[in-house]
Image 1 (cartoon, rainbow, N blue to C red):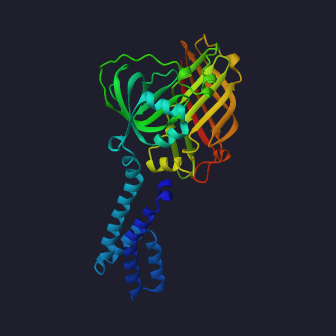
Image 2: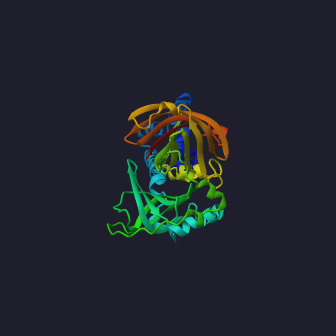
Image 3: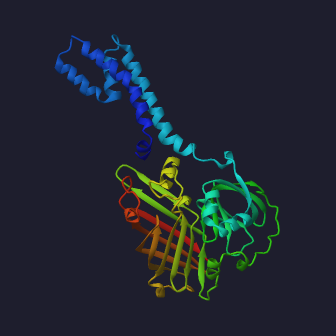
Length: 386
């Protein structure tokens, strides 16, 4: 239904396909003198069901008007092809392909420095553009959705991550060139989507250069944030946020697999995700989602949650177990911050934490148009920490 609303051309093609068959059938019907007015009305009512009605009338009167049958068959074929192309083929097969797009070539460290110096200017230059970044692989993370490759930048607390569109053989410490759609910059990390390794997908290794002292690179406001706290903190770059909208007419789903999160032993919890990092199977839906009409991701590029696990005292980080937890805090979305409360399961296993949570929000409260989606959107969070 969403594709039909956003692409009225589908209706136009279908209407034009059926118009000749309907007009010829009605002209033939009105000219007939062997039928009473009542019988003509019955035929018109039957004909309101295009395929069954017109085809049945055409078969009954095939000797007198063969064109009705053939036009009905032709209209049916055009309708089927139109629906297949616009609803099933185009939204997935014609999505952006970074292999076919021109790219901006740049080194990982240079790109990070541009964002640290002026994020707004850097976003105007690179956001939603295809970039080709050369660097050294720092680490590779894999899950059921695929691979994320992280490039070393030489600057403490920063990285470039790329969600590969398909699995490739990549080794840590290898020099590579990674090409993808730049979705933004968040908490010191530049993220790419639909990424591919265009050079260096091999086992050759390179020595990683020493990281620079953050104090020589970060802006004054960021120096304060770089202070290392004694409180133990579990970090996650291996997480995902999925949102689901279910209505009577359709189901809309998107997933972001490049989520940055942290949980401290005292219960402070933080999540951050780029709006352009949410991926839809339907390319048209993805463009609309990021447009000014909905998420306006060029202006409101990030979503963050800052809060606390209010029953953190029930969690023993040194004992393998599953713990029911409740988090309260501020969710910022579409430039609006609201207090929310969410339940979840925190699993501790050999020093690794796994958090699973599911909750609902009313996106209208965050200034987002909810006219074509469910009143409440279900948010599903899964993160692994170490």
